[in-house]
Image (cartoon, rainbow, N blue to C red; front, side, top):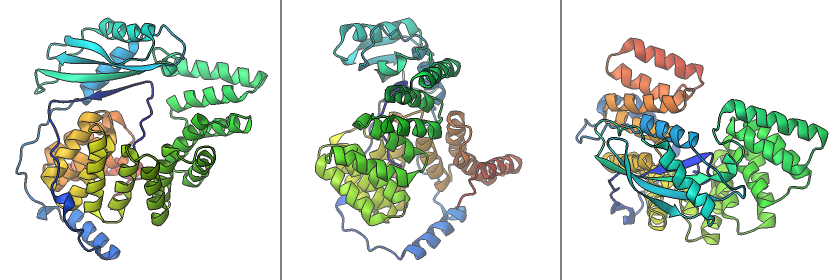
Length: 418
């Protein structure tokens, strides 16, 4: 899975007062690659034979910020005060206090438009007081919020019914006089409702009507990747590189699509090209790290993640993929630190929570696995993987009825496990 840096509605980053520990083992010689089938059999056995896993040796904070950040997210969105219509983005930073008050509110990244910057500050002030910090949290936490006005220009409250009304209006306009821009705008709104198949159809229509620019092609490639249409995604990436053969997004998306299509050599080629065209951007390194993980070359994956983090200490994917490699090398405590950092950077990412939940299960920390799975289910109620991991944790705690319920739900959602 390649993490994209696009902003939908209102994006934010929560930064807790801790830091990940860098590894020193990444410079060691690469271990010989095991036979693939033997390795897979070994991994399956270890995942089934949970009694062999090491016991919990370190206390990890069980504080969950999911509910808190969800409430904060909704409150700020409800008070967004857009005053311009030129599509700026900007970011603010502030320190949240335990009682819901804040301090040190200031512009982190200016939009270049004073009206927009003033609207960001006014929105935060209008949303006060914030919910109190969750029990067990530090007395203060620094928070960054990024505002994308181009999205809020359509919907300041981001309500599904309002989105549907806007889509209906665009549909009527398209029936009267279809244009490439109208198809593109409807596709953007459809994506807010997770109507990805319909959005790809509109994006294709926009391109056919003459909107063959990079933003449209990139959005189409990203959407095709997210729904597993890897063949179409690769075609879109090829169209992008015809216009711009140094486009980083195209090579990163192509690497992921090749990996998911079973084309390992092509995936490495695309990732290497991404690094070549943008050697100071982390995405090429994380794309190659993902490929290394799938090739069982975990120390090489760690080295690429280290390079990505050196370029961008807030690179979420680098912590996720480095944690994956460390877990496979049984460096469980180091993997836990990286998964914790991944969650700090993206507390509303269900996949980040599930990485840590699976590791909690590996370390026989079953109560903590249940907490992470439950938080992931709050974010994504149809996530079969979350029910599967929670089922296993409940089973190990002899909670048979709940384990069966979760297992049945996981299987109903198509996740049987391995």
